[in-house]
Image (cartoon, rainbow, N blue to C red; front, side, top):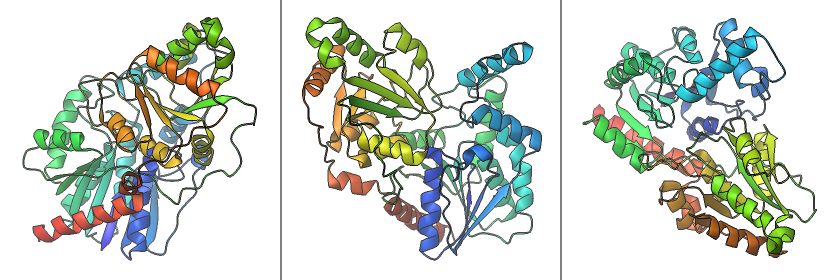
Length: 432
């Protein structure tokens, strides 16, 4: 088959979102299918990820206008900040950044977005192309679905799969901005009339889309981990007797909250019986989006124990997951949203480092998965966390973790990609 994969997140962009489409491109091209990836032009700060090439794989990059590309790069480049700057420009940038963080605009999920300016260049790149058997667009941002819709109208016999890593017009993280959030609902409904199949990352999300779009075929396609991922062979930490808890990835205001862990550490520091043991502890957060983490660190007086590791390469992040004593997972703590299974949870599982889940009273999807895999523990109050930390800190041995093999095998990306291809072929054959 000729398959067109439309995604703005793709290596060398260092993002967990890049690995969903990459796994499909790798698997399908190896199986002999002709795969074309239509993506954005990558910038200098996105050169961390290794590129994958295959004789059946073509990468087409479409440029955004220079001014838009520069603006996008400034806001997403590691270390970009207004700190140390003054004047009206710095003030406006901070205001704009707060608006992005609050509403999701220009953040690859809500309208408007930088990639709005990518749609026409992307379509121009495809003008001379012959029709594809299959088109699959994986969002966010929503712009990929707009491109796919236009191509589906042009190539009427193409089979279009609209894939959702996150929801769009009713996004569970960001509310959007009026009047764009009203337009998004109308536009999404209009676009999906042309889609032959909807896919998303979890069963609860699939149920959501089935209720929202009755009559549409919706399938669950999980995120996962790639056994071929390269991991930095060098040790991540010195052999200094520290007990290290590592968190990799993004935090969101009030939705992923480390406060219970911080309070537990604070109380252990204030108790003379546990002060010596807790002095061995170090908690490290790496990633670009840290929400109000710095404020929380100051609030609980943990500047000496909680460190911000900043932006690191993927190979380094995977090595830190491997070498940590425990991995911190902060589940989505909004009871109105079920089914948030980020790509990070599967990386954590494959690292075989014990996972500690903190900050959500209910047993939601990620906690259930961790417990099913026998890969860690879920804590719901500060007393439980204190007991766990005290036991771990008094032990001089690193706790081993052997997740259930049958659970890990379910989430290997090559197997997931093959199953998706089989599903596409099944529904495509039914439609012809």
